[in-house]
Structure formats: C-alpha cells, structure tokens
Length: 160
Length: 162
Picture: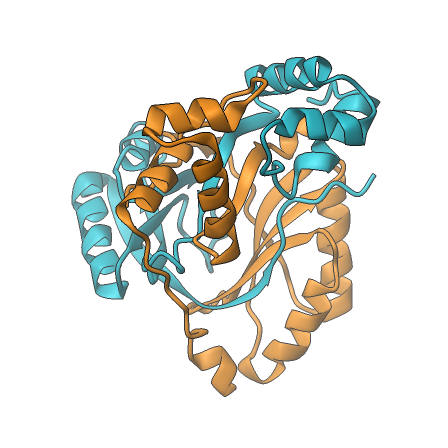
C-alpha cells in the first residue's frame, strides 16, 4: 500500500506522462518538484524497489509497430491447476500480460486471461491454439476477443 | 452495429530502422536512474547520447512508442484498479460509450467482438473507489458492469521483441 509522501506524489505527477527527454531528466523533474536531483533519484529507486514503479522504460505501441492482431485470449481452467498453468502461459514470448480473474457465471466462465500479439488475427488465433495445447485437459473452453475499436486511451492519471 | 463499431480503426504503421528497433527492444527492459541516463543507455547500444535522445523523441512523435518513462502500479500507490466489462445493445453502443468515457476513472476502453462488447480499465484513487464508480456507471447507463479485478498476475516482463 501507499507510503508515498507529498514529494513522492509530486514526482509521480511530474513523470506519469513520461520522463523528460534531455541530458539530465531527473534534474529537470527535481526542478519541477522543488527538490534536488539526488532526492528524486533516491525516491524513484525506492519506488522501483517497493514496486510502486513497475519499471522505467519504453512502452511500444503494438498497432503502430505492425502487430495488428492483439487478442485477449480467455480460458476456463481448472481452479486446482490455474496457478501453475497461468505462470507457464505468462512465460510465452507472444503473451504480454496474463492474469487470473473471477468468473461471472453463467455469462462469463473464463478465469485465465492472456493478451496475445501477432502480425494479424490469424497469427493470434494460431497462438491461441498453442495456449490451448499447453493448457491441455485442464482447460474446459476458451475464446479470443479481438478489439474492434479503441474507445478511450489515457494512461493512469493522478489527480490529487 | 454502426459502421465505426464494425470496422477497426485503420492503423497507421511505422517503419523503423535497425537502430530504432534495437532501442525499442533494449529500452523495454529498463532505463537507468543516474545523472546522465541517456548517455548510459546509449553506451550499451553503441550510440551517443544526443543520437539516442533524438531517436527516442522521434519514436514518441511517430507513435512507435506510446510512452517513455516510469510505469506506476496503481494499487501500490494506494489506489484501486480493475478490468470491467459490459454488454451493450448495438443500437445504444455509442451513447453508452459517451457516458462511460465521461468518467475520469475510465483509463482505457475497448470495443470487443463478444456478447460482453465493452471492456475498460478503471483506476481510482482509493480501493473503495472501484465499487463506487461501478455503481455510478450502472446508474448512469442502466446496464450491469462485470467487475473482473485480477486475483493473480502472472508477470514475466513486458517485453516485445522487434
């Protein structure tokens, strides 16, 4: 949980849209926040260690890079095996995220979600088959949901 | 279904040279925290600082990167985060999109080809904010929101090789 103080939160706000592209980006953040660059760097190191920052780096735009097939594959996996199998699915190189989520029966029987990326939808479907094979008998059913439209895309925004 | 909802937005793809690809691949794995981080990251790539900076700037400008910087973890900052889905009749889809998107807590929203045809991420300042926002959205739209918070993340490193 949060042990962020006012300065930490100011750093989050100053960097949530991105890190400045300049020779000394942490100095620039420090100027904005009103502290020293050393303080900003120490605080960001701490946030990385505690997991408040997942990582610092580049977020590729799959669509722009030609990965036009981005499918949310969803699976109804035996509860006793889903922790092990979810880990193995998450390790596949074409899977960017994998999560265990609650079912909503009867309309939503799926508990394992894995985002799969490929050059086109057929490639994603092939990859979904690969996941299905890996899951084996533990998997009762599966589906691939393709996005047909991006309706809104804003990052995480701290407002207070 | 309206035409816009039936056909995906025509994506504009970009072409990267080998140096750009190496940058995108390498910088997904992390970026240093130090006095001159671009200089340090450039060294590992065999580039100079100015070249790396101008290429990163360009990758952002052409949309090859959607972001560059720290990625924050909402729950660990004390906030709430969930994935939510709704089943909206095609005829009302666009009206409901407008109502749902009006909530600042809705971070991403995608139309998907399934009976549950609207999928969005909710990020709130407090954990309690999720239930409150879901109930507000249900009131505003008249449709049920399926709350699917993650129970476990199988995280292996968000890496995307070009």
